[in-house]
Amino acid sequence: MQEPGPGPGQDVFTSNDKIEAFNLKISGWKKRVERRDFSNFDELGQVIAESKDEVIDDTMMIVVSQHLTVLQQNFNHYFPPANEEEKKKNSWIKNQFLI
Image 1 (tube, rainbow, N blue to C red):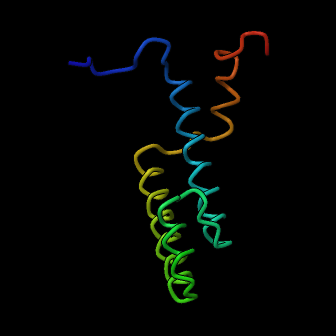
Image 2 (cartoon, rainbow, N blue to C red):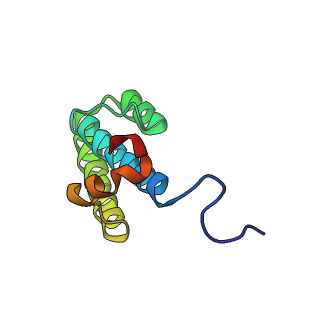
């Protein structure tokens, strides 16, 4: 059974970096979907390519985009983004040579 809490080499700063990276991934996925690029979603992209139906393409773009928006909102609710002032104030902890 795995112990709760951070694993080896994990701290609040590396966890924050991972959370920010995931949030940026969601934003990137949303932008691609809005351009009707479903390359991040292999099976969905195959279904759309095989159907060659504009209605399905438009509908899926809207549904996936809305889903990613809700996912990002919920993610930000549970893991609020750190403000720039806090990140700057604590940056010396990650890299002591910044002082």
